[in-house]
Length: 117
Image 1: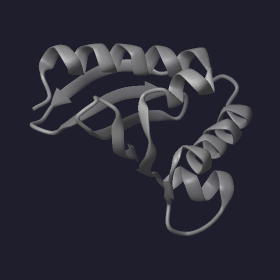
Image 2: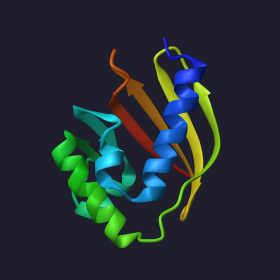
Image 3: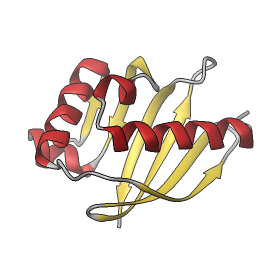
């Protein structure tokens, strides 16, 4: 189960990593074969599925996203703890967003889904 303490620490480190724009630090929260879905994937790199797999592909997507959004900044609003998941609600340069995370036994993200208002 996800503990409130783990969720609070993960959320703090995740927000700080994104605000630093340091791709290596951002990717450190994820397993090598994690899967991500986001409607922004199609906007940044094309395609229709909005789903990418693996650190290589997702890292490239995030590298491009950071290049086109140089003023990227996340402001934490709240987080929600589930049995095997965590939802982070935050404000970004484009408005409200909620990201859902599922973790492996080592505390690394294996699946995430970004959702936007």
